[in-house]
Structures are given as C-alpha cells and as structure tokens.
Amino acid sequence: MDLNGGSTLARTPQAHLSTSSVPPAPPVPSTASTASTPSTSLVPHGRTPSGGAVPSQPARGIARPVVTELRLSAFAGHRGAVHPIGPVTLFAGPSGSGKSTALRAYEALAGLGAGDSLHEAFPDAVDLVPERARPDAQGRRGFRIGCTVDGPAGPVHLDLAVQAEPRLRIVGERLTGRGRVLLATALRDPGRATVQAEWHTAGATPVTRAPLPDDLLGTALLPLRVAGKTPGQLEVLAAAEQVVIALRSVFPCDPAPETMRAPVLPGEGRLRRGCANLAEVLHRTQSDCPRRHLRLATVARAGCVGPVTGIGAGELPDGTVRAVLERGERPPTPLGRLGDGELRYLALALTLLTGPGVLAMDRIAEVPEAMQSLTLLTDGLDRGLDGRQVRELLRLAAEIAADGHVRLAGTVGERSTEEARRTPGVTVVDLGG
Picture 1 (cartoon, rainbow, N blue to C red):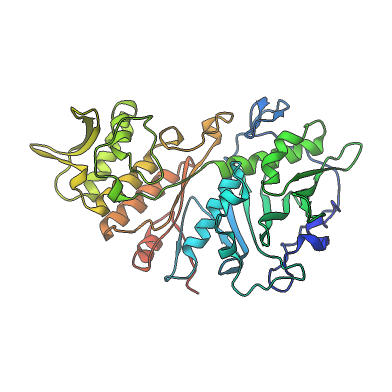
Picture 2 (picture 1 turned 90 degrees about the horizontal axis):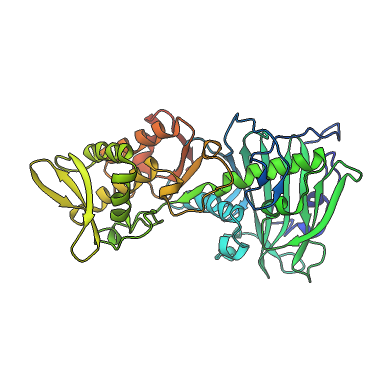
C-alpha cells in the first residue's frame, strides 16, 4: 500500500466489483510527508469501544464524534451521491427518490460499527446492487457506501466496497484521515473468507499486514489488533475509535401505534425500536427523570387534542402498566384511546428527550457520556402526523440538537418539506432533483 496517496483498494483488481457498473472508490488525498502526528485517544486508559487495550491519552474534549457526511457511490438507486449530515437532517423528495434507502445505508453502517456481521447489516444485499450493474467476468456484483466522521481526530473517511453476488463479503475497505490512508483491505484470494489488511504503523516498518474476516468491518476490529506503541498506531487507533463511537451511537426508532395501545408488563424500562413498551418507559421516566417527564407533558400539550396537564403511568391490578394523559379535572385518557398520530408524536418526542440509558441500544460504557452524541434514525418522521405535530416535533428536535448531545436523521414526505425548510437548525437533503 502506498501511504502517499495510493491504496490497495485503488490498485488491486480484486477490490473492484464491476468496473463497468460500480464506480471506483473516491481518490485518496495525497500527502507530501509520511511523518505521523500523534492523535489523542477518544477513550480513557483501559479499553477501547471494541474492547481492546489502549495507551493512556488525555482527551481533547473539543468535539463529540459524529457522522457529518453519507456517501452512496453506488447503492440501490443512488450513484455518486454525497449527502451532508447535520444535527437535524431530513431527506425529502417524492416517493421512489431514495429517501428510505439513504437512511437504510446509514443504519447498516451503524450496525457494522457496532459489530454486526455483513449478513445482519444487509439481509437484502442483492436488492441494494444498482439496477443497471452488470456482473464482471467472475459473476460479481455489489455496491459502494461510505461516511465521514468528524471529531477530536479531525475528519475521518470510511469507504466500503461490498460484493453481494455470488457471495456477500466486504472486498475492500479504506479508512483515511489527515490525507493519509490509515487502513486498506483488499480481496486477494476469492477462495478464502478473509481480506488482506494493511494499516499505518510508522515504526520500524511503515505498515502492518494481516488477514481480517471478510464479513466484519475492519475498522471496528482495529482496536483489538493495533498495539498503540508508535505514533502511527496511535493515529490509526484514534481514527478507528472515532468512527466506531459515532456509528455505535445510533438508535433507529420506528413507532408502531398498533403495538402501543395495550398495557404492558413491566421490564427494564428501555424503549424498543417500535415503542411497543412506551407505557413501561413512561412509568420509569416519571420517577427517574422527573424534569424530562414534565417537559414531555408540555410537548404533549402542544400536539395532542384536548387539555393536557400531565402524563401518568401506573400498574393495574393484573400487574401490567398503563399510561394516560392527565386532563386536569376531567378523567384521564388512556394512551390506547389516542390516535395513531398522537402516539407516534409522543413516542418520537420521548426519544428526543431521553438518552441512551432509556433506549434499547448498546451503551458505550467505556466512553464518558459527555463525549458521545446520540443519533436517532427515523424513517417517515411525519407519518400520521398533522401539520401542528410536525412543526412542534421539528422545533423540539432543533432545540435538543443545539447542545450537541442528540442528533436526528430522518425522512419526510413532500407535505412536510416546506415546514422543515422553515425550521431553523434543520438541514433538508432534497432527493427530488
């Protein structure tokens, strides 16, 4: 691997899926020097986000790792697409423009960063190959995606070349930062379930080579393989940790009102993706997070029909938990009687107002919460919501995202696009062109 601008991905024929149908990976910026700049580790001395040992490094504390760009070089209907990701980002456009597909790519990258296998991240991989892609001489087709993660280590770029046919595997991965290739992998032997990896060392030898599994994200494995003994290794670790932290800090949320109406059995009190246990979580937040619970009641008052003085939750004689909207002197309304839009509105507001400890997600215990930024992924943010609810939810999202702890990436239909454009702090990515 040439650390001064080339890469294994760019030079090795095996790393390309089909040169006529899948565009090559973006070029690596060249750099005139091979000297390494030591980077600050993002986690305290002890363990990395993936469990590996790292040397003690003082945290810079200048920024939380966040995804700032999504690249869909060749993914389903997207070709050569580069989308900015801000604190609140909404993909807009007519049906079939690729809004959900873009969010699907983001979620898949998040899963890979959290340690999911390629089959878990892309169970429908063949359907994600660009429609006009033609197989190469070996019958291979695939897709390319990537992202940029900004944080204490500066902008770090991750790019993947995925083979979907005849067998699902990562045939090329590249991690770059500060104009340098930090990790590059390529498929050398199609008969083996591994790729050849090379990562920056800048010690007695400029690079380290080793095989890595072809169904796992190499970047997420680096903290387990890199010793952190040289400035170059520290640079690789800092970049890999930054990407892993940002991708692991994602919670896909898709409230399903039909599952949220009935009382539920008490459990650990962590909100699941479909929000079926909303009543249980509200029962927990009213005692554990009284200030956030009170703020949720204020949000409910702005988006629900009739007077709302609070949100309550309690156990029924059969041991289940039921949540209600409190109506002052009027009888409370069980959440099961609310409309679909009201239930989705309340569930989405709750996810914005809570943190990882209240959501059913893999918490990054090795990293202080002050250095993490939770990102909520919501496909169809405005589904079932009226104009007032959309307006209040967007205002809440922009307000919450302003402090940097919570971010939102979602999709909206055409009727909500103008409202999103009018909301300060919201980035609209229009896919209609």
